[in-house]
Image: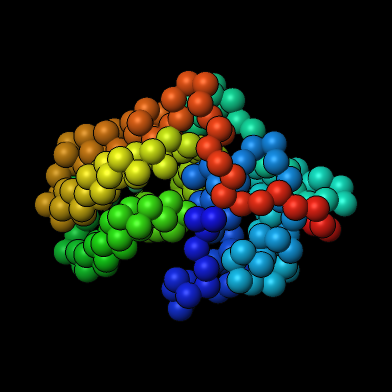
Length: 240
Ligand SMILES: [Zn+2]
């Protein structure tokens, strides 16, 4: 499967945070398939952790409506309709484009170091894109965008965008990565850093519109082909 193991886990991230971020990224990448049931012990084995943080993370996903408890077997992944995915993408555009523009316009020199700190995350994303490790890729992508948005100083916004991102489904990302085209769009993140450092609001807004457009175009599954990819996580019976 493509879900990364513990050796790739950043040292400062707790196991619980790592498991939560990995499972959320696996949901977005389509590695956890809608309608299928997964057991906590099986997922735990694949992640190289104990079942407890996996159960905690899955129960958080149940609370967020992304997973249902399947009695005596595990957790069933909730399916989202194309209309729901369109609505989520629309809200993200309304939030992220103006706020990122605002961050670029308002950034002061004391913030430059914090923005530069985001650059190694893009290096790691390019590395993950080249390895076609989409779960790692999406986990780092979420870190990049939430840290960037946090510069605006509105925690509610960051949490809201995080939840909306968790509800994205990028089933087309695998074929984009396999075709070698993911590295190119990943470079858009460097351009966002440069736009912020040069206080260029219009450029940042344009970059964000283009970046978010991937979510419902080339990164989404072509019509009728969703969830036909081979399973990368097994379906298992067990206790949730
Ligand atoms: Zn991104």
